[in-house]
Image 1 (tube, rainbow, N blue to C red):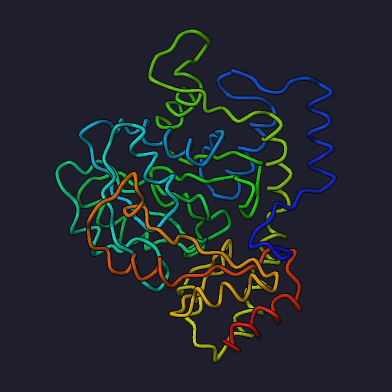
Image 2: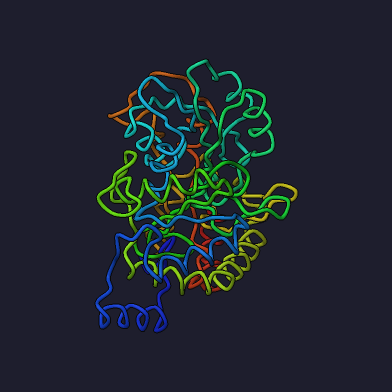
Length: 359
């Protein structure tokens, strides 16, 4: 596609940082606190999220896994998650031996429905994992209220929401832990990578061990951990990207505003942020009963419209659960994400809107 829905924006600054690390030869470290670039990146994350701590890891999936390990989630436990998400959310739960219980979504922003969540809590529920999907902030006030009443910890799957806020507060800072992805297609990247945010000192100390085989001083494994470390090269890229993030988000917001204006009157459901919500426009997602026709026509005209997610997790071959999640099933048949990333031009947006309106 000439106009991809998302693309990494890497410049000479990132290249210079990577070259310096390669010349120095300090590519990674098994030190408890991580390497210099890892620590610098973590400080920048804390500054943005306003969390006390940040723990860089080697993927968004690793972030979710580590958070579950930190809460001692294990076999026999249930974790409530949406089915309308990337499969990593569910896979992380299965990877620690627990069972994912799928919750329906709200139609207006594709995130977890608090009412359905409340219905599905059992004595086995040991964590709730809402997803801030497409950069839309989940109904975190309502979810937190339900969780607090039942004394159930919340892990925010904030993989897609770096830069998204609700009531002025960044995602990843509404609960015990927030988990972000730094995958190449996200609003900022380290190539592959992730980061966990928390303000709980005990969880922080535990997470440092979990990402490093449970060690503190080397060969002194104290708890179960894995090699979830973020290499210095990736951390250096992420460090530079964090400094560029506000510019990336500004351009995305500008493009989203233009596209919303151009699509007025079209027979599609437009993404409208809630009151007090500021989304990062990671994915500008519309809904239409003519989704497949629109997608095909846009792709034929080099506009990289993409469906996230055409198959809900509970309907994939591995999970294959015969449960009814009506809003999830509607979304899977209706959603289409349109390019608003920083390289998209006004002309691209006009082409996108014209094709949609013509159909």
